[in-house]
Image (cartoon, rainbow, N blue to C red; front, side, top):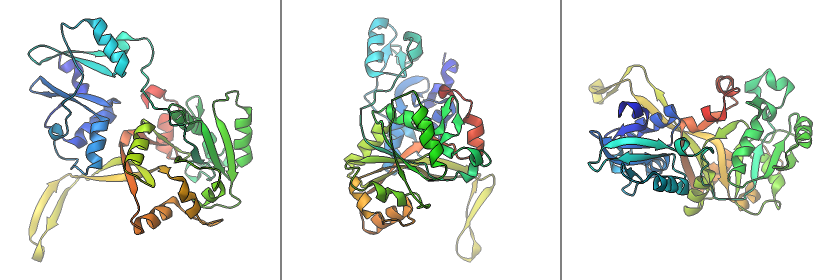
Amino acid sequence: MIKEYSNLIVNKDDSILNILKKMDDNNRKLLIVLDENTFISVISIGDIQRAIINNIDLNSSIKNILRKDVRFAFEDDDLSIVKIHMRKHRNEFMPIISHLGKLVKIIFWEDLFNDKRIEICEKLRLPVIIMAGGRGSRLKPLTNILPKPLIPIRDKTIIEEIMDKFLECGCNDFFLSVNYKADIIRHYFSTLESNLYRVSYFQEDKPLGTAGSLHLLKGKINTTFFVTNCDIIIEQDYTDIYKYHKENNNEITVVAAIKQYPIPYGTITTKENGLLDSIIEKPEIIYKINTGFYILEPHLLDEIPINTFYHITTLIDKLQKENRNIGVFPISQGSWLDMGDWDNYLRNKYASADET
């Protein structure tokens, strides 16, 4: 029975980093924690994100971050009651436990319901700025013909995939920063039969960096807003990012992907006079990578210089020097898809939504 669910089971002594990898490898955001085949708890991506935000070492055990209030059912519970609880809480699955604490089986959402499980998502209704004016040089020669936002992925374009993620949390007011092949982008949206997107355009006459064109929106946006590059897809409940942003009184929140870079050799550190300090075999370097996805407060638009080449990281540097609140919200490496990269694009352009 345990082997049947091995892709969903972890041990309480496993490291946070290994759990994060397992979630990505199995496309799951919830796993079951056992101790010698005894059910202990479950661990979610949210648990791990809170640990990362609190600067807990990713190589430390998960046992110190486990929740005590977890949902499970006993093997003699009525299935109709289990079904009610799963629908109410939109559970990905429900662990079924014996009265001795052993995992008996797992009931998945798809075992009980015909509809695809949809996450409960608060309707934010915030404006979204999509930086769609770049030349897409990484995707040449495709972008010699099409602007990068209109590169096809699955049965849509990259920019529609991005916009659809925002629609899930009630955001359908889009501002597109355009420059390269802007007329093609405008024409494409004018011919769409769908009226789900409310699209406005603001156009830079010359390249202004990742934030320079935002000065054109002064007076047009008066609430917290999202900014995203037009070649990334973030698999995350955006309300979680928004709540983190607001609860911490951030002026900017940067979404960062946890990325591991394995070193295939033993690494050495030394002390004074070249004496050996330590040897670590095949370590992994862990970085938080800027994904190009942000939440900003509207007053920051007044701090963007007019008609000046200006990156959003320059704005972040300015705020940091002034000791203002800049938050970093972590996501897993597998929750960040950079479609401006050829390898990622070729791997995902025909994949189904469930496979990404």
